[in-house]
Length: 263
Image (cartoon, rainbow, N blue to C red):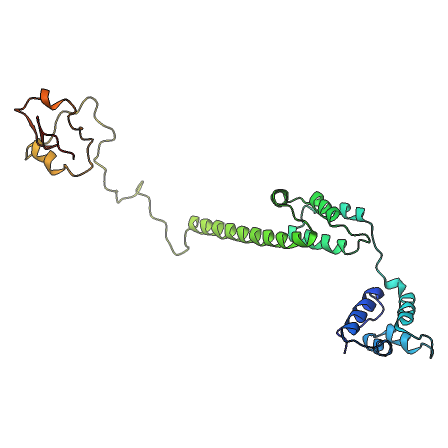
């Protein structure tokens, strides 16, 4: 049985004939079998037309095809010129996905289809500037290459919009207070006074000179925090060792007037 959709008289008859011919040729069917099997692919008014044909009204499938196309010529699609594609523009409310699908359907009706002209037309009708920039950066050679790219771009755009909506919803939920949560009473105008902040509102004027006495020497404190990065420590002496005072010793850098160690 041929895997062809039955024809009822309301579609393009030439497409039905070509689909049936291609399938029967794959099956290596003879011309007589193609004529007899054609009835199986018809239904409705087309089936009635075939049954009313007079005996010996055709002698080959080619003659049967001509009779069939003549009878149902009204259902044949009218072909359009290439310039028709330039009239297709993406509407302001039309998504990129819908525009590409619409454009592809119209391209199938073009009589003398040309890929270069089709790409120029789809490029001129686009309103999506980011996708237009993508096409200009890496041009597609055919409309068949452009359609998958448009689908990938649309999927990425829909995913990004969904992610933004989720983030906006989360921010909105954070700004709302749960219904079961009661507002905290204000400390102003109530009997229960809040603890008073006894810290001064501003620093005292003038230089602060009163400090707590240390319980150890400054020398010992520096030695204890020598390995910590708490202060900007002075660098080692860089003068010539021959001219240093040999009676002095730097405990922090562990060097003498005559010996210099690398810290």
